[in-house]
Length: 271
Ligand SMILES: C[S@@+](CC[C@H](N)C(=O)[O-])C[C@H]1O[C@@H](n2cnc3c(N)ncnc32)[C@H](O)[C@@H]1O
Ligand SMILES: [Zn+2]
Image (cartoon, rainbow, N blue to C red; front, side, top):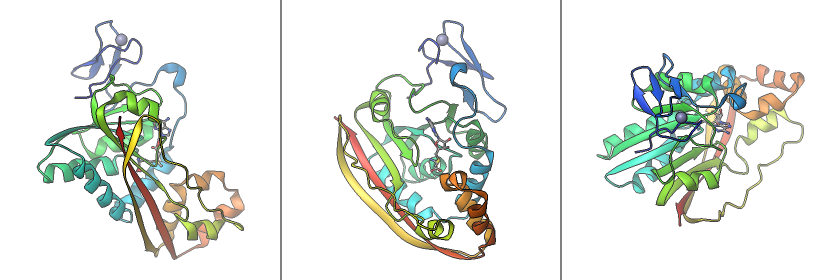
């Protein structure tokens, strides 16, 4: 089971009511919502998604537009799980998929033990509100607060992919399930905003130390028929933050939009 380790000395953390502590005397408060902040003070500051992005993503995902992706991810997780499975969701955001995976595993008769980390405490504030059944910590995927070889599976959905660190925490034979945008993901949204939109680049997904077991593509169109949904989709992407005021206004004026969703899923096995 992936218990947290102390970010200062690396020893295992134990839970005592409202805090985690290690045998060297370091301790970390558990927030009222239920997550613990294990980011070292040198790394503290504004990190990851801010409140506006997190709220936009929560409201948009709650409407079910990405449910086919979620279903495909859950099917993959179930396919590669034994009777019980320990999972770390890296960059879990506000835990939409974390919770879908937890619930679908339980329905499939599999016993899940799930931890989630994200560098944004705003994301975990909402994530912790979704369930108490997931262990949540503010931390970076570049320095995961877990012992080596403790997890059966790492999930990485539209979040930073750090293969060396994921490989460290995985047991031999452990899996990574990674989801990422394909070339024309959100193409019509980009066309609405930019004079000259660019396709996403397809990266070489081979990774040293891992074998690719499977790749899947999930592609479909959604129809957005309210400005609120269009704005939420725009605000949950990095495009909004890289776009000037004039271009941001183009989304403010839009009332309906058909948008292509194109997701890639790659399953890796640690060798
Ligand atoms: C596009 S969101 C995806 C969130 C969630 N997986 C989902 O699909 O709904 C990317 C997430 O990665 C987080 N993030 C960014 N850099 C990170 C890092 N170095 N370590 C952990 N999380 C990070 C952000 O705060 C954000 O919540
Ligand atoms: Zn310690």
